[in-house]
Length: 469
Ligand code: FAD
Image (cartoon, rainbow, N blue to C red; front, side, top):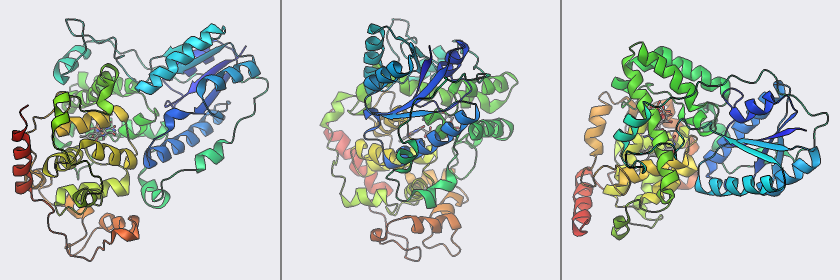
């Protein structure tokens, strides 16, 4: 009897435990992707990126002598029907960790077991299962450094190879229309502007890991904060679709650390921030939607997403060069440098006193490396409402930050065309990407600041002081 492999965000052949174990049974393997309600609410860029990744993965499976079936609807009835149709007696999948996914998977597992189908889930997309990492007193971690100290001593299983062969069923069941579904998306600016910046698929991710380890890791600790330097790995995008596994990255970088590569430890630590974000999402799922620290509910956030300051922030015309460069980088490339994410998040929540959820949602619509856990943690950390957060009174000054991390003005030049005697191609491309009704032209003068670094800081501190936290 065949084994169904339920593909979710794990678009890879290597180190894919569900696929590997299914293939190892020697029985026919039926991979299926189910577009269900957990995809509702996905932003335009992440949805588009997911579909591009899925398309490539379905082709990869085909080359490996298999196929990807596609179904739309609730997972449980879909899986039951597919099992009945094919005679499958087992369903394997790699775990997902968002609260709605956990609720779905728990129900699917128990219901399948009740009707005699073996349902097995595997650890694949995290190195440290959130319920396995405990503090000395048996609780979960709320602070990063002790979390890091704990997990770096834990064993991380070696990544699995790709299965030698994925056995096929004698006859393939019909698939719903995958190509049709893949071609529908809401990424209006997508194909023309963002597409050249994408890095899709397992092979591209492995090549990038290789490049990073060969050329960048050594100077990572020194250079990773400079947004104009190609110093970081860029692996968050393939990680978000499971085209590479954290274990594959971990073992490669750990080996370099052992050999004395200075930047490797810093890099491993960053990779563990992702694990920490998932740890927190598992233990405190409200991190996705509510102030992690309840006392922040009393903070006088602006919650109007149509406030002119918020619009200026989204459109990259706050008049603060670091913020605008970053917001334009986001719009054009679907990505933003980590330092820049911290700066724009701080500016929105502190200088513009705006609810972090407005920023979370804009990132959720624009990022091609969107990750629910890392995004929510990043926003709450920046706003001061989250775990292990920057204290609210530590307000980044976006002007001095730019001087420090872009001393030669390269980042500014890359993204801001106004007032630049010879604007860069990337800066110009922004004006081709944005909608007409934003009324922005490359030849216009650069706008004055909606709130200067100094004014914003004072206002933020005042708002903070009037609440007695
Ligand atoms: P590298 O510097 O090469 O780091 C390696 C890997 O470590 C990354 O790919 C990522 O998986 C992980 N990592 C690094 N920094 C962090 C971090 N601060 N938190 C969690 N994981 C980290 N990351 C996302 O993947 N998706 C998001 O939606 C996202 N939203 C963010 C929002 C805000 C406001 C902030 C401040 C940060 C956010 N981050 C997010 C974290 C971080 O900015 C990105 O992971 C990083 O910029 C990705 O680039 P890279 O792959 O080149 O990183």
